[in-house]
Image 1 (tube, rainbow, N blue to C red):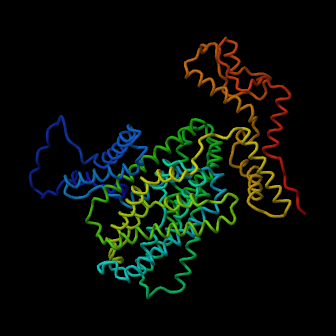
Image 2: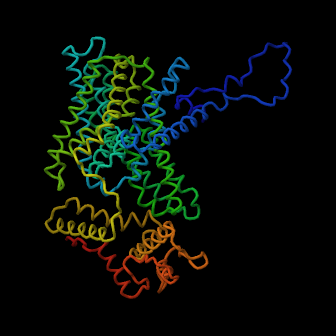
Image 3: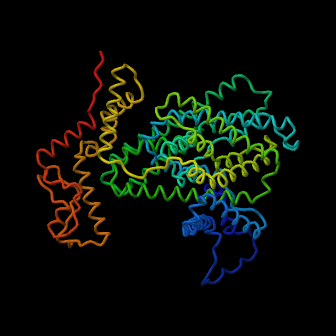
Length: 617
């Protein structure tokens, strides 16, 4: 297993030659065995895992050093600092070893570093916000990526025909279209690293980030189709090949999504039966999600789309089935793995740029690529937004379009794809590699440095960090049911109608199949919310140095019983002990009278069954 993994990690397979004994001629005297050694240096035995651990340690220490100064991290994104650190470390390694080592290998990136980042993004993605803007996300991801790839490739080819690109760049139209397909896709790692520090509003963030995740299918198809056409030669491409290329777009995207949903179903169903083996719940989440990624990659489908749909589809059921400790373990382990992978990626990008033997420079190609990706990105966003605003209730204004155009960052995906090109089939590979490095560094460093001041200068609406109150959730459910009722009355089966039908189907079939009985039964939500408020207020009171009862006089129930008539809350205990702090926010009597139970039933009625579509004949 280690022999298979080491070449993928870009590390040498050592320790084998040192252990093999040379062949001895028959009859030659054997050397006496060495005596007992008190100390023996065995670097070759641990070189590979030691280097992996060392790189992760260096990346973690770098993040600590960066965040020691809040002024630095508030001005410079962390991704920019990591790339600069990678450049410094790459220069040191080059000066000491006289050759560039520890490059970002495509196998390492796609099989080990990218999956944790995408899984974290899909699992913790706000599903309601994602599906509310799914139409816009798909438009920018599919139409926008096709537009950017073909226009950028064709414009670069026209630049070469005009003589502005050096003749030594031996590339035809198909070569430039291949380069345009890999350089035009928005990178999810770069977008996540930069936009999380900018804190733009939720709608703007989910559109740009959702585009960066879903455009992977288009990028994979364009890259493979153009690469196949280049290997075949333009004279050998038939009309059926173009039709196969169009069909592969649907196969790769829908197939990747289907693989993710199948593994999401398996994961949710498996966690239903882990009540007596809670210890393996976090392991199941990571194993099955990673299996979805590898299965899609094995079948040449969109692996990013597969793991995104797996995380997005299973979270509701998995979170309901596993224990609270398992949820905490999944959350922090997933965040830790994603953060480490993201840090290593940006460091290796900086180190890989030091190796000048892999790239060749042409100013016309570099400057033309930078201009065209920015120009066609902005033009495509404006045209697509104008069409989308004809159908959106909340249109995207000009300021949003500026941020979306400027936030089209490129990253490690483009670099890994350009490294995979075959130099014998694409003679201009070295020029494409150099151009890709410049584009990645420009978008991550220059645009990453300037996007935060741009957002402040344009006064873009920022993200509001607060959880919805019980009143807000009640009104949200009410309006959802009202809009579904209106659509049903007028006979228009729109978004709210289908969402209401999906919720009814999920409640009637999926939840009962994928959740254990104790998870999907009706819960007394008002009582649970009030209980959590009491616990939160008690913890806050203790943190502020207030007088607290002893452990013998203060006991907190693990869960309020539905059968008990009265429960003693933390607020009442503190009030009886003579504390001057009143933690009762609304002076609610905790004795559950008949009126309280009626209010709870009415709350369930409003949340789940305010409107039921009439039965059609």
